[in-house]
Length: 281
Image 1 (cartoon, one colour):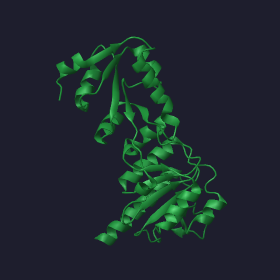
Image 2 (spheres, rainbow, N blue to C red):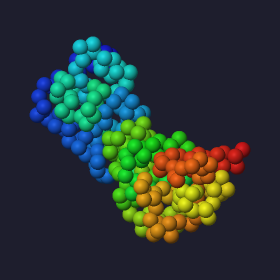
Image 3 (cartoon, rainbow, N blue to C red):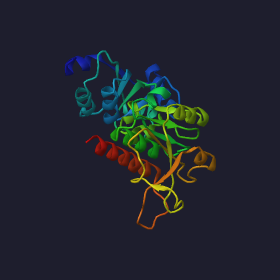
């Protein structure tokens, strides 16, 4: 691993916004809203460390020139795999290439991981989240983070769901999006794959609007299960509800009509993990 002095000699200093590396970084951030992309731009020490921990290939790392060399110290903490190109940009050039209004001072171009539907449904007892037109990137990112925390096998994003590579989704996932299989799929193919693998679909509905829905703690979630999570505003369409094997609800004693989509998904994942842990013990 190169020492601090070695790294300082390896850093390229760029002053132009039209530099090829800078244009590449700007283009990588522009791709973060797409479902399929070879590379994306990420920003911040935490996401960069998560990308390294996840084994992603770094095309290049960019640091903003600071008088106190704080970003050089971040590089040392990250233990970048060698040889990773490191580019130093002055503050104006750095800000012109990244997305956030208050950049953290370190960014990278990384190769995106690609997952298959089979990977999202893998394991002897698959636990899957199916998102139907989930549009808020913060919700999707939080949902993916919960999926990793509670041992879900993957996430299937139906049409209308925001891209997993959206920069806000990535930040909300806290790096889980690099590891959890998230697959964009058409409804017909997704439900056919679930049926083929005998994975029952539980449609999440508000307890207040569907008194016939089974409370989550009474549903048997110890076997394969897929939770169908609807749009933040309109919920699940009648067509999607008809595709579900069962409707499931989270009892809410308080006077609220429904829960946030990511919160509801997280509670259902926790309940499934709790039941599985209890059965195993």
